Image (cartoon, rainbow, N blue to C red; front, side, top):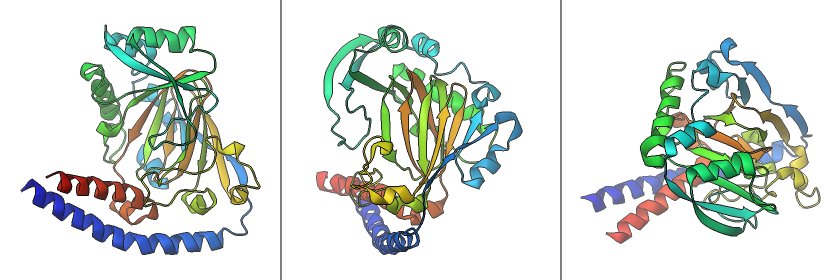
Length: 320
């Protein structure tokens, strides 16, 4: 029965890919032609006060915005902070990985010449002491995820508090179990990528620099082919500002939205907006995900998650 369900789902995903592939090709061609004469510029991401906005209206607008004081307005300013993580961790031990600071990039799909320089087991309290007091080893960066199943269920409890607070301010469906708690040292960078769903990036501690691009600039941003497993990642350097104009001439046609995210604030990241982050100082971020509209599945950027789902289903079928 399980094999039959997997086969049906795989067939459905194959049909979805068959529909999306020509849409992606036409979209790519049209945006490449229409953007050929565009002149790029830098734009500051709009900042608004949490007590002056309707969160549902902000989500519907589909534009990036930094919401100042949102954690305080939601009464969760004390959640997922260094003190809260230390309280929740108790005596638990984790594996901490250090990366070469010359390529301080975090990503799921490999590349960017990121290299591991060391791993060690340490209690969470020692990890937090290193990150926020002593500092990491010179020439290294550390980027640690506390996922939904970590800290003996305490991470899930923290994310549930975010979910409960957010649902008091919006009617938009949430997906808190796809979130996590990220702890990064200075310089840790998440390279340019996009997601197929809208989200809020909450900043509970420290500061991050943010750069974002519209979905219509995708063809100027050297994104990988969407059927590749890494299709939502760009081939630009890990810090896109470092891109050589001669190697990436189309980048200068893009509109680059920039800003800094400070403690207590949240960045709204609309669906399919390309974004990259760099830690200015040791920091903690909580990405919070909303359920995207069903029309997202017709967006060319969904080819990547659809192809990954298909591959997993085919692997399941083969395994059984």
